[in-house]
Length: 130
Image 1: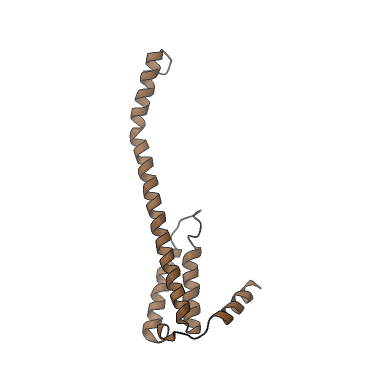
Image 2 (image 1 turned 120 degrees about the horizontal axis):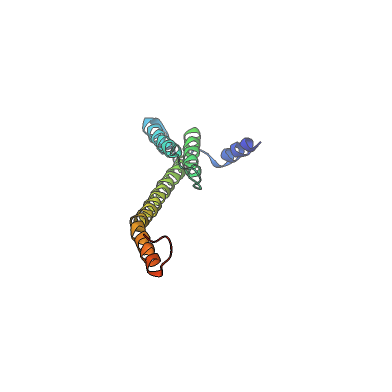
């Protein structure tokens, strides 16, 4: 039922326009490279992150519709989704690197925090000081 809705939508939206971008060997190869790139990004095993599979899947779907309908405008939409996917993955990578750097700095400070806690416990005469 939902597939019928998607195909009905595609039938209304996808039509031959700017078909120079999708016809011929160059167009098929470019769309194939786009689909392969998006497929590799789809295969990145990152669970629990929103849109990590949605964005590359949208690029693949738009590229497939572009090839089927010889629609260059849909091809550009697929390229846009792929650019958005790459930007999103770069942003996620930068966030993960920043989080790891913050965690690493806390781990490096742990011996100092422990030594200060022991020093404080010794000065107060509490058990747990060395």
